[in-house]
Image (cartoon, rainbow, N blue to C red; front, side, top):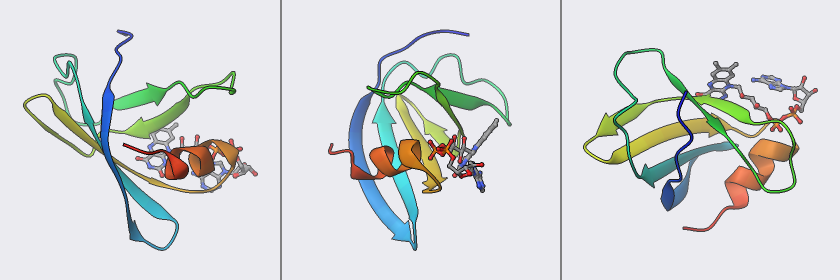
Length: 79
Ligand SMILES: Cc1cc2nc3c(=O)[nH]c(=O)nc-3n(C[C@H](O)[C@H](O)[C@H](O)COP(=O)(O)OP(=O)(O)OC[C@H]3O[C@@H](n4cnc5c(N)ncnc54)[C@H](O)[C@@H]3O)c2cc1C
């Protein structure tokens, strides 16, 4: 596992309680289907695992549903 800092390029609501993040950074560790990122959020001890939806060059897309405090904070994030 590699710790990487990604830049959040966009956070869009795409369906009810469902959001898409597009992130920019070093995606070289994403090499196979089924991988996930473990997202560290300020103020939360545990990381939130979210599956990789798409990778293209240095852009990484994830899609998540708001179910609790962590994903609620993620949904409020600004680019
Ligand atoms: C390997 C892996 C990959 C994942 N990929 C995705 C993904 O691509 N997209 C995505 O939306 N989620 C994904 N999840 C689930 C996601 O990690 C959780 O929804 C998230 O961590 C919840 O964090 P929270 O702080 O919002 O909720 P918490 O505060 O941790 O939980 C709030 C409440 O919601 C319940 N809850 C938590 N998760 C879920 C859930 N998934 N469904 C229903 N109830 C839940 C809890 O039991 C609790 O009652 C993945 C989980 C794993 C383990």
